[in-house]
Length: 61
Image (tube, rainbow, N blue to C red):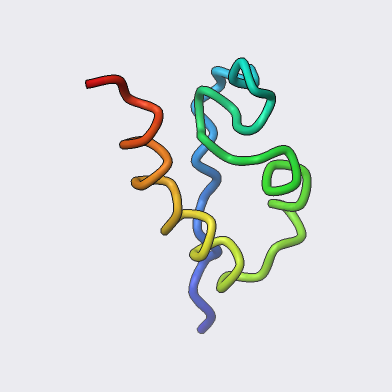
């Protein structure tokens, strides 16, 4: 039995930040969002592992 692929971190707040670098909702880049459906499990996990750091950098204070 194969494991299910990690789910998308999308929270339906689809808007790029002021720099146009990442989505303010899920914190993925345009390339990560566009490629998500074709990503392998390892690629998805790599992206998901980056999100906590992006979140801490995006959060003021």
